[in-house]
Length: 425
Image 1 (tube, helix red, strand yellow):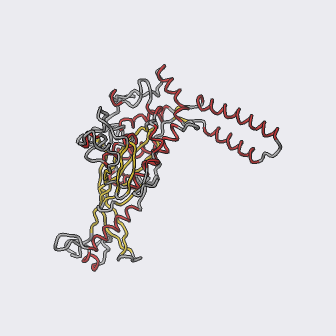
Image 2: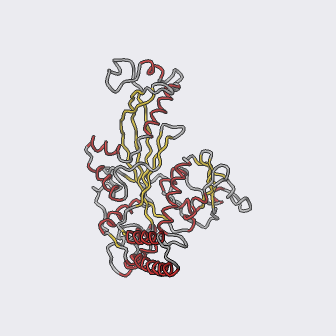
Image 3: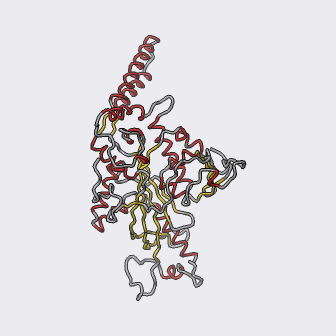
């Protein structure tokens, strides 16, 4: 794959003119294995809920998620904790984490399902087994689906001649941190001329302000909370950025939307998880989608065949001879489907080429920031059905990353390591 042009907002992460740029190098470095005695699992407490998580599970989560969970770095060894060898092994130690537990459950659930679908189980092979011959072809030929980018050897997620998008399950990780500021209009005409957007009653405006002690009044805090609740209900991923494109005419941002929609998102997608932070005027959102690699499995034929067999099963009451014939037919169809799963897999090279561009974001989260002003409707008073409109300014920060799901065994047991504060699954 050729080196990306700097004009491409997706593939070029360095230039400052790009609408999505690299996360600063001052962030904590990703974890690198060492000779230290590693903890097999950790008990994390997230806002009152406890999760027992395998070490390998944590290491396979997106870098941007780990940075949010462990802003000071991920501690995985006894030496990092400063414990002598003869002390407790650390697995009973509880680590408090300021992270939304519901968001963490969403991430683990998605990862677990993606791992199961791609790598399969002991009784049901996944896509990985059906498409490995594609990588075998790459190692013996110059097939264009082999990755030819400029990743360093130490960072390369697959073996020589292999395409990591064939041997791993790629997931696009898009996060948004929205910090909002509620603008309560002044009742002074000289400061705030009358306009349709300033519709708060004077009585409410006089109550919703900062007190003499410099602290917000209860009414101002209520308005901020209500504004946050109204923003949380706006769940579409691309609405705000598309509005900015329409306002500014930024073609690079439009290209960013188009690229993400070509790679797995839909233009009307909702955030997978979105919530208001409990102590801040911040809304955190995350969306996870499987990257479209252009690899097509002949599932339609299998599905239609399975449906036909099911219909025959439902209508079969003609005796043991018929049942025996149907069993033979099922075995024959099963063998044919297994052979088809290996030989019938095809690659759309154009889609694969598009997907490979996103490998630049593997272990290299990138971000984009912009301001957005919107009107929101909030209740006039606590518990009131009457609504009033107020202005809200939002600072949106997007973080884009590509993750590759590892085939390690722990990933298939994400949810089994998940407990609440009472220790229940």
